[in-house]
Image 1 (spheres, rainbow, N blue to C red):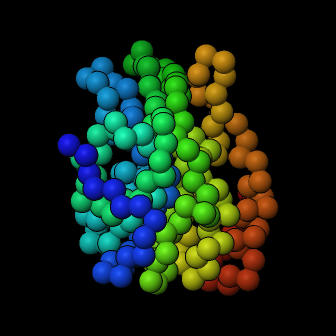
Image 2: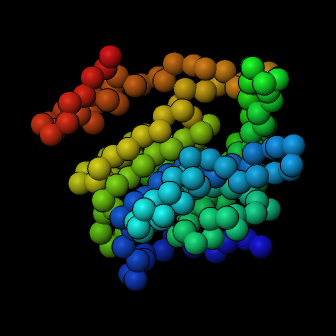
Length: 185
């Protein structure tokens, strides 16, 4: 059973106070495919904390999203679902990335009646445009930047990389905000 997916619409009856943007994932485990990703887990956590979460993501129609069907979801159509596999010998872990869904940009944002209190970008595979934060000047901005610090090799193994544009991103977000301290360190 798949959860309800709402596409590109204004939500007059729903005021989202926590908006998370990032791919839900298909995680390959020994028990089979399991739903994963920062967006899925953060959305569910926000709901449990009493917030009204919304999720903007991208995945293929064959992914079972029933664990997050209670969330408002807008999904960008994709032929693929971002798919990870973690292999471990109990000490070391290797992560592989086999497929990536469509990227998420400003053009994929829904028309909201009011800005969410919190906007959380949670990329897992460099799929989220960092400039989405500019669309929400009055919202608290949160980042889980792991997806901007990943690359893959020819064998699909996930490797660490430098988050390009980090310094420009952090300076742009922090200038003029006297209530928070920001550092490039």
